[in-house]
Length: 274
Image (cartoon, rainbow, N blue to C red; front, side, top):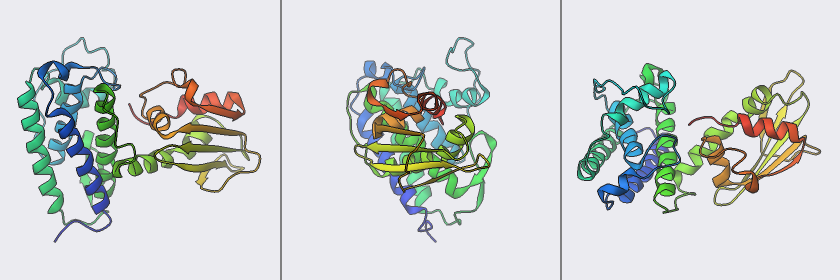
C-alpha cells in the first residue's frame, strides 16, 4: 500500500518546503539562529523548533514535559501555549543540534508519508488533541511549513519559492476562508460582492458574493459593480492573511476601489493564522 493519489500533492508540497527549510538553515552559524522572523516572538531557531516539534507530534512522539517561563510576552492563548512548548524546550540547542534533529525528522516523516495507506477521510488525532481527517491534516501541515519557510526567507533575506507547490495549497486554504471573512466577520451587505485581484507569482481573481441571507460564496468570475475591489500582489496577500503584516504597514501595496469602510473591515478581518 502507498499514499492515496489525492494526498500525493500534499506530500510533495510538504517535502519541498521542509527540504527548503533544511537547505536555508544548515549553513547558518550559531549567531544567525537568533535572527527575528516575521512570526511574532519567534527567532529562526524558534521557527525551526516549531516545524520539528509539529512533525514529531505527527509522527506520534510524546510531547515534551516542559514548563513555560512566565515572561513570554507573545504567548497569550492556550493554543499559543501548546505550540510554544516544542519551541521553548529547544531554545538553548546549538546550530548542529538543530540541523541534525531537523534532518532526522524530515527523513522520518518522509518515510511515514511514503508508507501511509489510510484513506483521505480517515479520522486521526491532530494537533491540540483535535480530530481531523488525514486529508485536512496533511493540507494544514503544508500550509504551516510553507508559511514558516517564507518566515525564514524573510529573516535571512533569501527570497524564493513564492510559487512553489506549497503556495497553491496556502492560496486555496485562504480562499476557503474568504466567504466567511467577507460576509460574517467584515459584515458585507447582502447582495454585495467583493473582488480580490491578486497578481505576482501566484495570480488569481476571485469574487466573494453575499446572498440575500448574508451567506458568502466564492467563484472565479468577475462582478459587475462590486462593492469593493482589492488589488494586491500575492506576497502581500498571504502575509496579510497569515498576520505577518498589518493593513497599515502594507497600505502602499494595496489598492482598494469602492467602499473604503468595507475595505478596512475586510483587511482587518482577513487574518486566519498567526
